Length: 209
Length: 141
Image (cartoon, rainbow over all chains, first blue to last red; front, top):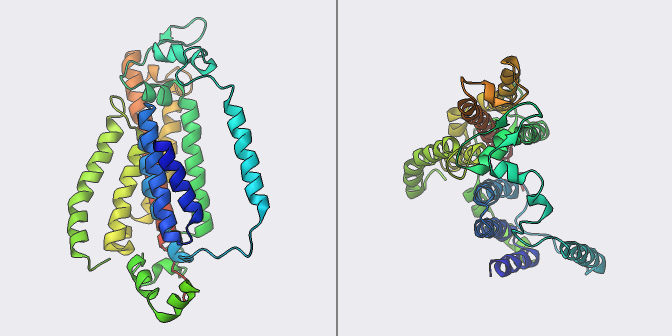
């Protein structure tokens, strides 16, 4: 049922030309994904999806929309190649899922390797040492922060690098005495102002064309 | 959005609770769903809401970009520093068992500190990216 909603949202995103509606629908898409994660008992992932996907990403996309345009340009003519590529890729992905183990299968390789040790909260530290026991109720936090702390450090470094990259690309307003757009006294975040400006005649004729 | 009276009142009412909820998610991650990643995003969302309602200048005043940029690096340093602290105390890198007098306490402490580092970095990156996007003027047309 939720998957059907998800598919409907995706098709609507593809069909719509109004980018404001597309951004809103992509937020909805994230929220639906979060609901699916809740049903799959992945509460922590759902939490992240709802906060990042539906929250922050929507705001950032709206900010991008202010800087660009609200209407998607019409493609010159229908081209079969993108559709063919998408269909082939989708078929390959579906084919790949055919020999995956069933959901929650205890014999799945992912549940055989180190997962039993993590779930029992007793991980042999090294051949001579004692088993490590963390002893906190949320097993996700246990694995994420302790058993897999190295991976999480890598994740945080990825976020760090991404943040630095965005700052390098978009600039850091308000430093080095350099007049940047962000220092201007004009009101920022002009979502309402943008809406007003699209009501003027030139914009409207452009939108309806 | 400076003239939306209802929005301003509701936002002023909601923002403290959002921040409090972020702290709850941050430090209650051991017991319930949540942790540094989620808490950082929620914490940043409070500042973004503030910026949306009251304008970017006031938000920059509340969260100075220099401090926020410092936070990006600080979180990673807290995480890695916890690992190094474990090494200095005789364990391996990111082995929290040696951080306190017994292993279980050390693990709890280590996870708490590490999650805090994650939260600081995530919140700082989100706020910085938002400032970077929102600080740009839309092109005149």
